[in-house]
Amino acid sequence: MDKKELEIALQRCRGFESPKIELEQYVTPAGVAAEMLVLALLRGDIRGRVVYDLGTGTGRLGIGAALLGAKRVVCVDVDEEALRIAEQNAGKFAIDNIEFIREDVRGISGRADTVLQNPPFGVHRRGADRVFLSKAVEIAPVVYSIHKRSTRNFVLRYLKELGCRAAELVEVVFELPRSYEFHRKERKHVDVDIYRILVE
Ligand code: SAH
Image (tube, rainbow, N blue to C red):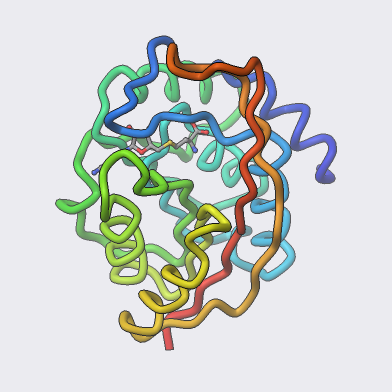
């Protein structure tokens, strides 16, 4: 499956029914998810690996990892409603090595080979992105994470504090359809970075 095929497959996933702003529920655009997943695949971080998707939302990153040959995928989200949609989405594909756990990321333990995540950007709840980063590097040696470009310096500094480094940074644009009442435009563009993070 190449990047374009993966993107088309992920577009079959339903989005959030009634997104909760306090949890910063935005669907990861299929193209951005495919970009992250193929990078991880090429680096040897997906096939045959145990992959966690933290803040899985509607499940795209975890489902994509399963489609690309992960050994086992664990999807975690605090929101029951989102998980229900993620499970439905997974049901559209011939994958059976994927599980869903309702839990605050702060509470999870376990060991992964790779973490994939599109965490809250920490815009609506300050520090929400930190919670995800610190947990991710605690449970896996390699982490792929998406952050707003405007927070790059902050993220890089925080990674250093955690004893990690950003081995790669890929710049992409998030095109989000209008999903909240307070959005004034039909579409919104957000510059983001995909990080490949290594625990030193
Ligand atoms: N990749 C997902 C989007 C993630 S949006 C997709 O394509 O659908 C961020 C997700 O993090 C949301 O689903 C939100 O419910 C979840 N979340 C926010 N704070 C959380 C926490 N403390 N613990 C677990 N999940 C959390």
